[in-house]
Image (cartoon, rainbow over all chains, first blue to last red):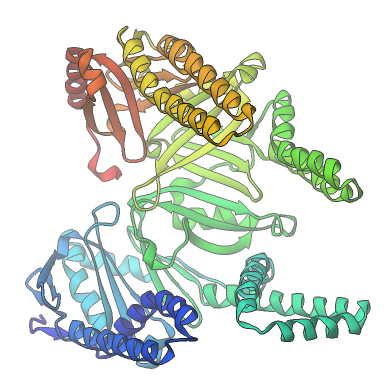
Length: 479
Length: 159
């Protein structure tokens, strides 16, 4: 048992430093813009002082941060002036994840993230940089108690041997990248970046470039645009591939274990108990190709794991493979996902109305102010009409003994599978128009990330169905 | 969910809501007054004060005289052994089921206005949502709170 006080690897200084600089960067840049003309010298002096202070603090906070294992506790002491001690009992630890950013990998280090059972953001420790060996040792030692508890180490080991796991193939990874639709995000970032840079470039440069582009003629401009788009697209593919490269999911007895990332290596442990719902997402690009993403809603957890709002269980697979995947990893959630009870026909007009109305307003405004451009909104109007149709068609639900499956579409088509006991509350909503049409909206709440509620809405179901679902949900009759 | 819940909230709720509506609308009237003064000082066009007045009058009628009554008529609740059933909403009627085993804690709450009428509201929290039964008689509210917290029993392993 390791019990001497230990410091983090000195590289932690770099991380402290980078983090502090990043936080101060905004102020530094803003003040640069306002002081660069008149007070440049003093400005540089202040910045140099600031950097020096940050550096000192980084070193000190590394020096004052120690951890050690005593009996069944991880004891962390930190704080430069105010000393803080955090003791985490082994039994309370739910997951220990080792992740490595690019800098970590250069020094052969890992970041250890320790999560406890408390829901929400509470008690969680992060060791910013320890060597890979120490990280793994720490994990082994902190996990020992948990495994020994049941007194069935032997069977456990055996199970771990044939625990199922699944890794993404390079082919699939490429498909995932090329259908990720992240080009939109990159375009937005680029546009934002350009508008920022614009302020720093002299006007002359701008005018010259503009004249140059005009001089090129329309065909060359189009070719250039296509090349730029293509490069962005490739970047998008690369981004997704880096994020999900080597994606592996593995099941141990009571937890799912995910590792991913080509440059940055991330690890994520998901205790099965904390999964609140399983989702299957078919994005508008992937749906025609038959590819889906499987994700989970996990209660608690923290955002600094770099996960989005839902936890991806597998980034891409064929629609037909989902059942086998669920069967293997989370058998509780196997349902007849495709045989859903649809929305009633009379709900269609509500769906069309809802998706068309914003574009209708836009079209009316354009018709009034710029009638020559009316074709733009009209195309959008038709597209939104079609989207409304798709949304109506996607809507549906199904109950099995303990499982509720609902499907809805915003842009992507989502199928959510929720276990009865995970639903925190059930709401039926009805406005006057719905009432006259015998329709109602269903609103389910489950626990989401950071202990904040997550709500699923299914609009314009037949009122009868909503009531039947309420009977299914109600604890009253079953006694 | 076919039948609405049985119990209504206290009748005095209407008075309490009316008073809090008067307070909010009072702010609107203050703004109108300011606009009126500014209009006469700076010779702004007369329609500005006209619009401000219309907005104030309409919202006074709506929020002070019409809505509290409608709201009271719609608000209903019923507490069963296994779950809580709440109905509310004026334009959009919402009916909610909250199972007892999902309830994490129950609070009673009382602001100065509710206190004047010896009323209190009960707030029921699950891990994901919060629900409120507003403006019950004080003793009803605390009795309800005790009853719900007695019935609530969260399964530890479900969280």
